[in-house]
Amino acid sequence: MDIHEYQAKEILAEYGVKIGDGGLAYTPLEAVQRAREISSSSWVVKAQIHSGARGKAGGIKVCKTHDEVEKAAEELLGKKLVTHQSGPAGKICSRVYIEAGTNFTRELYLCFLIDRSSERIVMVGSTQGGMEIEKLAKTNPELIHKVYIEPAVGLQDFQARTMAFALGLEDPKLLSRSVKIIKGCYRALRDLDANMLEINPLVVTDS
Image 1 (cartoon, rainbow, N blue to C red):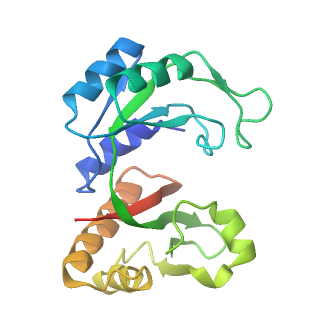
Image 2: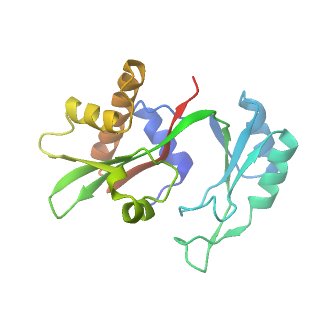
């Protein structure tokens, strides 16, 4: 079952993963209201469709004012977005997610998925977040780190720390936070019987 970004974030928040403030809107006026409810100097208006690569298709817009939020919502709602995942038929956007803008210093990649060949769960991470992981695997495979997890044993603390260090999160404050996020993601995958859980990008904020 595919789920929307806003639904995934609601789930991850329940597992202790920190997400940005945001809200769902079905009309431009609702989008403005969501922006007013979110204390921020900028907002990101995101089309909610079952497809990746929305940014390349024009489905993600950064706004500095409420008027820009309203205009972005008007442009996206009812629009057909065509991505390499949606195919030529595209997907119609019927709702948008309004999220607080985030000042970040690093973009990372984190994923858990079922590796059926080894009958284990593999945790995948990279310091090159925001990129298409398939493309990165071809061009710079050394930048992709993998940790295999025995389902009967589960994710161990040392494995979470291993991935955190691979992602350059060795600072004590970042390490404790990142281990919590990594373990929360694993619990979500396990409890919900998911095939894959991906965060791209996972960011380190300037604070």
